[in-house]
Every structure is written in C-alpha cells, then in structure tokens.
Image 1 (cartoon, helix red, strand yellow):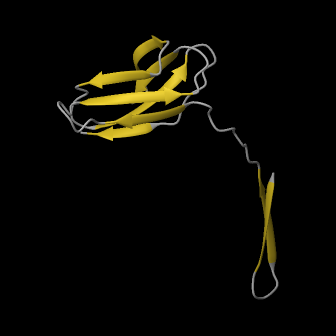
Image 2 (image 1 turned 180 degrees about the vertical axis):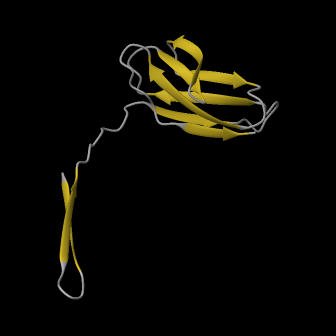
Amino acid sequence: TVTLTVTDDDGATNTTTQDVTVTAASPITLTAEIPTWGNSDRVILRWTGATESVQVYRNDEVQSGPLNREFWVDVNPGTGTWVYQVCETQSGVCSNTVTATF
C-alpha cells in the first residue's frame, strides 16, 4: 500500500492510499531482428531464459509452438506493426514484447 499526503499553501491536507502489486521481471528475454540482407520480409525472433517449450504469439495470437529451441522466423508477416511475445506452454511465463513494423 502506498500513501500520498498533499499539503497546500494554506496548510490544508488530503491523504489517499492505493494498493500496488509488484510483479517480478520475466526470466525470458525476447529480441527481434529484421534482416537487412536478402529478403527483408521476415522477422527473426530469438529468446533466452525459457526452461520449457514455448509458443510464439503475434498480436496475441499463437503463431507457432510448442518449440524446444530459442529462435523462430516469421516469414512474410505482411504490412503492418506486429507485436511478438513467447510464453512457456506449461508454466505460462511470458517474455517481454517486441515490435516489428513493415
């Protein structure tokens, strides 16, 4: 719980409280690369820290999985902005999100 007390120039005060939930950072780190060589119509995703197979999500929809490796290539995802994330299939632990724009 966090408490905030404000006092104005005339000495009047007001106090409010708010519950705060702290969540540990994910142990899974995800990166995305759009190659500058050859065809640039792909996104190469790489991740570390997963302790089991993962599923790959693009804009909150499953694209592939379960995968027991630490990379995946999204070939020709189309024009737009894509938000990727990987999540462990059993524990549900998810990585950070990364964004690719074409």
